[in-house]
Length: 160
Image 1 (spheres, rainbow, N blue to C red):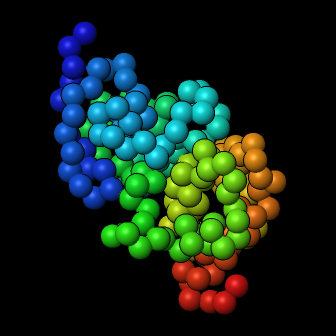
Image 2 (image 1 turned 120 degrees about the vertical axis):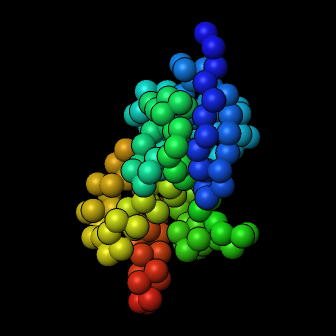
């Protein structure tokens, strides 16, 4: 099968790659662009480890074809920090010890950032609901939720 030329914007940078029409966006990000932050946990869209944004919508990149990214904006974990400066979510994950093995953390951070961009003042229930598609085997989620809530308060300019 012939490869398709894809031009897309990843974390603000225009990139091009050749994709087999059957390749997932996850595989294209990892194998073609060297962006290994997104992980394949399940390959069926059940775990959220591969979460990215596609034109601002949170998606499981294992369920999106790479060719579908043509002409679109992709946001990955590699684009969360800006110029080496951690995003408030990343800082709060460290402060709250909201990660253990780290396998799920990139997907959770991308999902949490997407939530806070849509809803800068979520309730705890909204955070838990939004992150329900991101599975973590190591934590009890409480520290993750606290970190997201604390980051939201910081982003709003409030003390948590």
